[in-house]
Image (cartoon, rainbow, N blue to C red; front, side, top):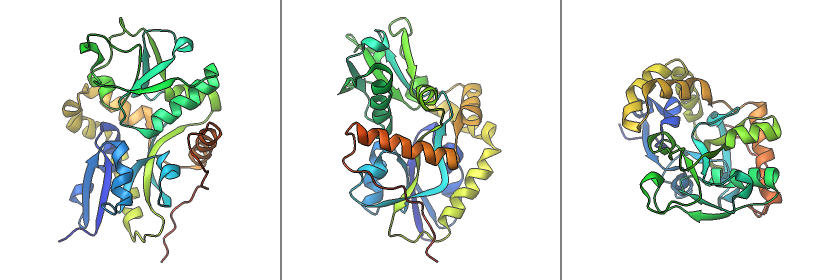
Length: 270
């Protein structure tokens, strides 16, 4: 049977509770990539839906809609969206990032503006394995599995900041890093219901999912189960929608996005 829908998602462990088993669903083709390339996949019509970084809703040249069938977020610490620094955070002038996530870089700017009254210079990180670098940068932003797989040595980087935790302290709200998005003019049929069904199914299979994917992703299995089952959030409710709009507003005020699109939720046209 040829695929009716292509679903694009991140290749990190954190997406597994949303996508586990989707590749066996009739009519679904699942493809994975790093977050920063998913928007391109979506707007070039190579996917019906994609688990895009939240900032991409505003940056996209094509109008998108948000599908409230699943997201990747936190209501406090994330564990895997973190700044590691050799100098105190208030002294940070430049941050090297690995470029995998647009949203995390924007959140970094929002947090630093709020906490320290300035936005550091952003540079591209040549290697995410800063422990093996002869002259490591003073400050790095890492996201995803690499935070656990190749965590910077605390002896070299004694100062750390979890961006999800910082946002929660600033706003009292959760943070949504990515969610399912689609081009606004597309009819997705039953796909949103399928995505919701797998999110709910996998909610009760966290230990199994961790056991299946932890080793390949470079995680200790027990930590992976805690991460997927207790640290991350996968729903989009009223608080999450409030947080999304506040984040976009802060980004717009800082000039990170040129114009502010209103939040648009997908509604099945049929």
